[in-house]
Length: 115
Length: 268
Image 1: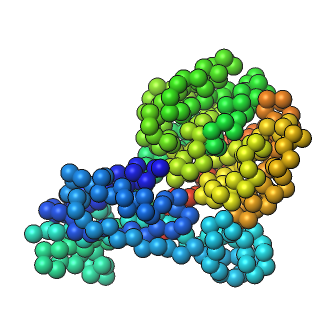
Image 2: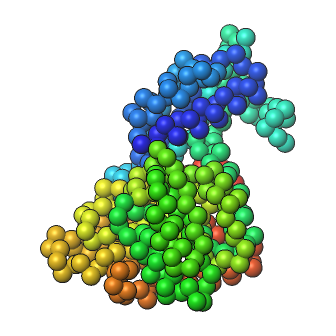
Image 3: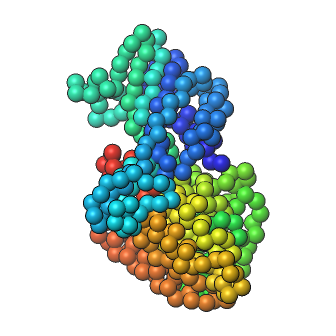
């Protein structure tokens, strides 16, 4: 539901970068998003053309890299992959785990058309 | 070095930052998508810290009893602590009116169509809502277990309510929200004898399965049952926060949703 807000923030951020670099247009935008970011990828992709319409970002390619969900267990030290609603250690069952990857909602890079 | 004139581009990272190919420039950013919201949230947090108060973001699904919990809290602590409430709802001033009836200042943010509060909405509200002399500021977010989890408001702590009239698997269904909690409150406990499908132990198991170690407190705000643990937690956080301010460490929610971006950048 909030993906449009997130997308509007993304477009504003990318447009500012384009302006700072004197770009004519934006070619592509690369994101890295994890399953615990709270953002649904398909909704974000659907919102992108609407949020970018009429900006320097309009017509650009949105590339989303999915970050894996990884845990580190403080009890036994195992690093393992996990599901969003089962974040206990799959080896020892401890809930003393830290998410080391999977919360990302990151703008990685943009490609600008400069001339 | 700044991000404006290009002086942050060195021989070491030049290749990374600019790659002019046929009039194309690649720019590495590595910033959170909600960077502007986060900047505003930091500003709000600084504002709260200047007033030496603790700001608590209260989140839950609609009807879990957020306003009732605040009313009971005001009844219990209103004579010892100065409390203020900022309410977020899509429409109506009803919640702010309920809080004001308890003799506590309240400001209503009407979000219109927005399903969550963001740091900018809260900042605008702060212009209209004096913080002078407050000990505790509650921010009652829009009733929603999805979107509010993604937006830092500048709060110091997140409290998430789960009423026993909902499913005990809510933490498993909404992991992003429940992972953001600094405390989870099981509300409407007086109804438990009537509900054979809500098992508090199962609710706790679902919460712990998220790797969450936060306190889980069961109470009934309406019947003023078992409020002690909640009030102790609240006062404890305020005392701890004021101690932290004295030693100049900014307090932040324990589970920082954007801790990944903080890992790649300098932690404040």
